[in-house]
Length: 409
Image (cartoon, rainbow, N blue to C red; front, side, top):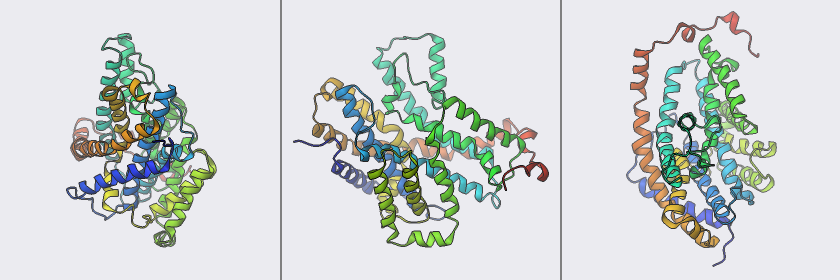
């Protein structure tokens, strides 16, 4: 059966299968309380992570047949990756800028915030990287091919989210492709997290101590220098704007109108149709407009707030980190790369779409038994840190009103 590699109905079929699976899981999984949550954003996360899976599904076909890891030639399948990650960045900026805007009434505990981020992101990341390393060592015949010093350099690099851009394991080049290369986005996330004290100061919504303020500004500069961050930082601005918009009742009332969902879909559709990538000014304007409307309460005719969508959103981080490992394992160890290279587009997509079910189940298990226990341990870790390492005076002494008066009006 002939099938175009970038046929949009493939995505529809895969998404239907994924939502059907999460619909069954919803019967045994309780959803978080709606109070103080942005339910449309909760649902959006899952769609974005799943679209990244489809994006890499198309890239793998080209890699297997032409030995080239390159972006899809289809606008739709390219935006499944680019725009999904851009919207993830907006979600991050939206949620944490919101914390800053609320900090006049609920001061930010910076120690707790950063411990919570580490406990949220690192445990599953460590498991995923451990699996990647096992795969890489299997591909290098379980033989040490680098010096001990180089090996420890690689270990350290992966432990700090590949910030220095080292992507090899035991001399295996491009080892990050075993995870579909998704680690590239994590330094951008950490750039934003570590700069939050500086953002709080600039927005004049929080009075960070001198220590935390220095911490924020230094990290912004160091990350920018080490990682060579580029225009992919711009989506964070859309999230910051959304944090302000959601506090405007007029915008929220307009966003909650049912027909406003058509504007959201129109913006997303125009971004895909007219722009080759998410990281251009026109695309970012369209994506930011759509995101602001969703952040302010538009749930796309109930789709984003439905139970299957929100369950999918609960496992978004697991889905994002693990889908590449699943594809690599199946393509190489179960089927074989040489065999996959002979498959047609129809055969390739039949397998990838079929993997939607085990991917959802794997992500659900990882979310439930790795992510959530780690998050629940946050208070205990914070208490332990405060017992063992009381904050130095520079981290707790606030700026005086006079010294703080150097920021923008």
